[in-house]
Image (cartoon, rainbow over all chains, first blue to last red; front, side, top):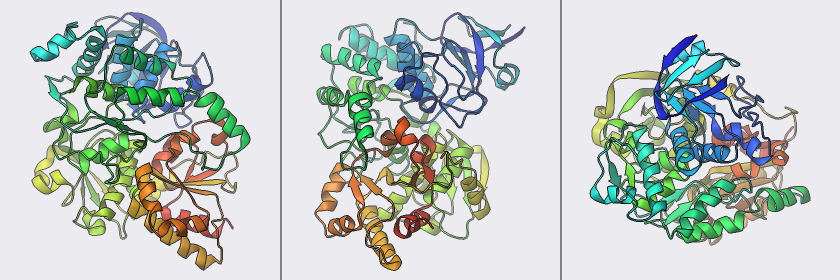
Length: 146
Length: 428
């Protein structure tokens, strides 16, 4: 087991399976198909993201450096959460970006089920975690790769 | 809620629900958002108008419309009027029966009701739908130093860099909430420290760099950092005239979409670079040298997303971000000249130029309008990006000179010169 300590942006406890994007996660490109065409598994639609393209995102521990792309990003993340198409948690190796922060905060304030979000986990975290790993997240921002 | 930032009594009262539960949730959202970035306080929004990114009544975005309805029902309104991004539909843009059915009956079936929500919340006028709200014809032009609550990456980077306003790269909904309470959290590009350049970009090309490729290269390299670009004035001059502004509009949109740039400084040209010179460069800034070979490398790296890579283009979009009036004139002259040279009367590929509704109206009053119409080019206020965001349009071989459109859709990028050749001569 490996343990990493990050900063809880939206605190929460959750266990989920890791889905790892080593490059910037384009929120709009990743979710637009899932939201528009009723894909309940929310397969990643971003053809430029070879790490996770066409992999289901719903219920995963999405591990990423930051999000990139359109400023609709936070709103898209909020919609994904409100429509039960979102990851179980988002784990950022870097400081969270403004679009992802908006999405995480909107989900926390305007939906009944916040999405635990931890940032500043460091490059070592993103190097260590592999898609398919079991992940446990704690309120204080501790993340375990089981 | 627990928070560290210092709130004024008025802000605290809103957070405590003195203006109702909905306003308290709006303030809580902004405080939590600011706390994520270590904001120490909330500062007043000082611009005359806001700008929203969400212009589309996409059926599946139900949670957004529900949230808007909560705001409206609670009697919450934006403290400032706002413009909004371009509409996703325009009957003038080439389409077919199937697309029309999919667009109107399914995808954008919420457009009319969402437009109505925007009116209730503070939309400044029914033709304020554009990503270039800062055009003179549109009139949402912040002053230097104004604090904004805007979204739309290309508009934010333009307002910060060319106009010297202060705005973070906000997400949709967050920008509306800032306009509603009249405050934004103080962090990032709103602060002096956050506006310092952490990259020095040395332009060493032998010709004027294509704005969209230069912006793309810088965006991909610096991501969300602030670049200070040297030597570009050798190519675009030291005056912020119409040509320079149009160049920076397209350059900035590429930096923001190919990376996540919210502010750039151009040595000897943009307001803060002129005012502070190299004093605006942070200690330890990294350097990126761009020459002809680097631009070629970046351009060659763009993937072609067409199934048949040799397909004949079926549509061409020019104007993402929306074209300025001067750009419309220049494109009209170029297309007319190109057609004359190739012995054609109409463009070889269905082509759409896009601009703000107010710019389109002004353009229509000039002699250029008839000249452009004669070439077969369609002039529209549509958002090409929204047009492309569906499975039917995705399968179409669409070409564009916009690096933003290339990034978010399956459209294929060509330089403006290459595009002109293709649409006036046809594909050999």
